Length: 108
Length: 116
Image (cartoon, rainbow over all chains, first blue to last red):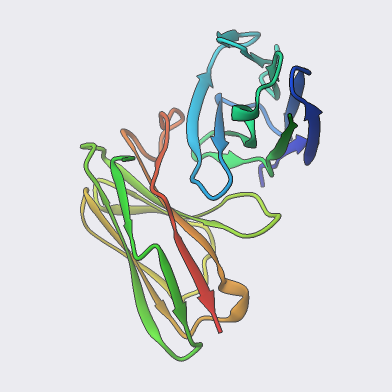
């Protein structure tokens, strides 16, 4: 079955440093979505990418979808303590398969 | 306020109990989902309902029984669960379901289940 792998599992950064999480699929995806889950909270949708090579920005967050539509990345510039949480990618053909997530800790 | 409401937020039950989780969405969506979130595991899709019809059952044990009386309500009936079923159960809804582009998922706050 389809697998979506995400690395790293954990990332600790100093406030102000950049952060990147990577997502890789075993199959070509029709689209990729990104979610953020704050500690003790529920996943909240961030963005969806559909086109090959697509790049989208949301303030300090940059999302990319690979040319082959099998990988994606989320990059945060100059992290803040409010960025703390777990970031999940999710992709699929019929239904979404979630990656295992990257837990981001931002040290003040 | 997420637009998707789950009750109860916390539930402790014994292995012989019968309990139900409830989910209600106020977003006018057509699809509803149950996900299981265990520690250190990816979100696992359990069931999908599209226009009240079950379109996906990801090999979930029969001790979990879903019910979708209408597009706004979803239940998960629990019976003779095991301790390893302890997890956060998340309900979600989306505009579409069972298609290549489901659109974004709106999650409820989850029901934290502990099986003793």
